[in-house]
Image 1 (spheres, rainbow, N blue to C red):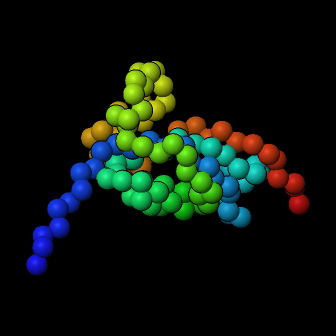
Image 2: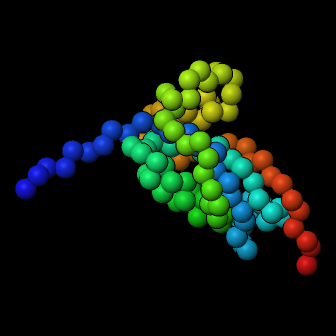
Image 3: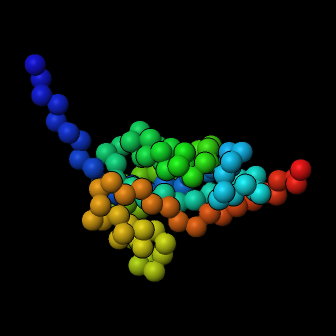
Length: 111
């Protein structure tokens, strides 16, 4: 029987487009939002799964993921940027799934 070699996990960053579920407290009055997500992953599939876990917890639906890739592939990240801060927070915790500021658009009609 072949032994499975675990994939190496590194910090990934991606822009996640979300929309609120009916019971979302985060952005229930908007149509949607973009947010940077930072987490440890071995590939895009794992990044996507962790983004979904986080957004489920926040009662948001993942609509799309753009530009997700390992942090080293981002090149130079400004040390004052939100990504640098999130990556620094995630560094010591391989279970971390962190998010930045929600950039929202569209107002939902009040019912």
